[in-house]
Image (tube, rainbow, N blue to C red; front, top):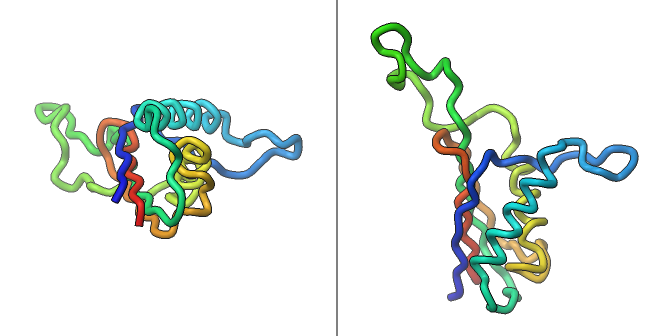
Length: 135
């Protein structure tokens, strides 16, 4: 089994709709994809792209809002009620779309090779932890 694993620092950006002129509606998508592509190329080094079915596992981490932290004497302390999982926008499927397109031609021949895909959205230092494995 071949495996490629790497981390991309930064706030994950979704790949959503296109504008009528063909560009991305979200201005953060293009820089995020470029960062993912660069990290993937570094992780692959001189290895050839993977062929055949592969799995894609991504852990997305987003910064916590101020409301997750206490105030007064407890400023900076995480509230007991603060959630672990990020359940607001962006949607996981749109985040995965940006990752899949970023890996095409670098890690995999085409993003249609992803036969198994898992994603989690959580709070923490903003980043995406990506693992691609042959099946």
